[in-house]
Image (tube, rainbow, N blue to C red):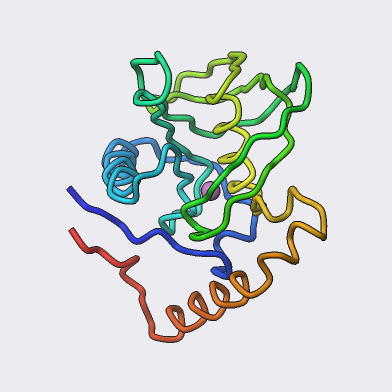
Length: 183
Ligand code: CO
């Protein structure tokens, strides 16, 4: 088991579009570490770039909040369609500690993706799962929940965002190259 540090707002890996997963051979190990890290941080979803991997990969576990028994791993995903009405729902983010914002998103999402074994799939998701998928897909495209709200909402958190940015800069300057194993 390896718990990796979740990087915060201000880290450049969170502000660019992640590259595709090409080599599936060590993906299981990376995914296992991602689950360990997500559970340690008490999140319900985690994108690979949040723990320092530049990969189109994310995981979701909402088994404790909904009547869904499986956990999800999505590789090389693309949103091909959204459906239903736009709904407001409060979202937090492991990379934006202390910030929670009401984000407007469509209630259904159609996703094309690969499984951890490389099989291509296409499925429509709704409810909290659709919400979490869209949040994680935003991460893989370099976007945060603060980019999904109006300027008035964003300004409320200006001080927190500045502090997070400074923290990320200091962390990088300190030369944290090991992605911070804490085990
Ligand atoms: Co997030």
